[in-house]
Image (cartoon, rainbow, N blue to C red; front, side, top):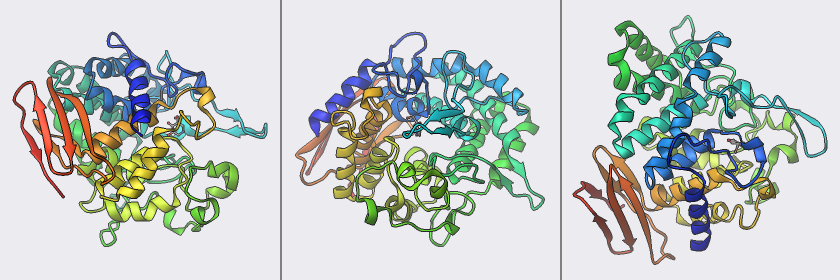
Length: 428
Ligand code: IFM
């Protein structure tokens, strides 16, 4: 596992430059998969590692987005919306380059709708920018480019959200992270991310906007439905998901990652409770402070058994969340799958290039999941949960310019820094 983790870290460190702009394709520089296009893989899965280890590289990744804000605004206008619509797949122009069809495994033509519907990318880009600003404390970025990104992404959501006569607000006709279900209404991930985006823009960039506009963002955020059942603490993945037919995924196919859409059939899978990858649970991964307190366990219990891990992005995110929930055996199993994704060609697609997002998520599982390290105001909090089979776990970071080395064993947490830093350590 240690060797495989180092393999991931090596590739993450090698793939992004530290000057100008850095466009990181889903398969890095190692293959032609996805035509080199940039997805949320880079913003959400890789950037957190670089923000915490090589801030200049994370800044270069954001510069790639910042320089394409104008193109995203043009794209929004052409769609009849306001603000900035970042493309689901992005290349040099910053306009949408997702193909509308691809050739399937049996030579058939498959319609691709992600470019039209996977709108959560807009909030993902805003999230990445905030993540970088929080970790690095880069004030120039916070007072400059971050404001533009927050305002224009919030404006996009404000024009995208529909208000019903009862006052409730909705985002309809989207694809969430689980790409097995298309054209759904009120995907919980998209709605809660949009809500976070609107509220963050209001608090961090509101002073630069008209009061009326900021009030509207807040009102829309307050009215957006999020599918939470306050009794069970379950988020319904989208409106109507709970009425889909259950499917004995693991009983039939076992625990390994599978391309369930190819095995079950894409049209059929739309009607089943089978997920490609973490969807609701991406909220617990990205914005744990925005979900209902105590809701991690119930949503893990509900969604994990129906998740095929048909995307390589899925296993390490689940490993991270399982570790946070102290479910070490399951966490370790999925971490091991993620860490050997390319070494063992687990998904039979390494020939098209390395899976950069998986590699970033392996780091997140270790640093955020097992080591339990989180940015916490102007310091760090550490709540380690390491498996009994490990001797220990070491993580090196840069937090707001302070170099930090965390070494965790079964008795102690050792923290060394090159400058004073507030660190709070908790044990479960
Ligand atoms: O961004 C991912 C998506 O979440 C699942 N399909 C593949 C894309 C590129 O890795």
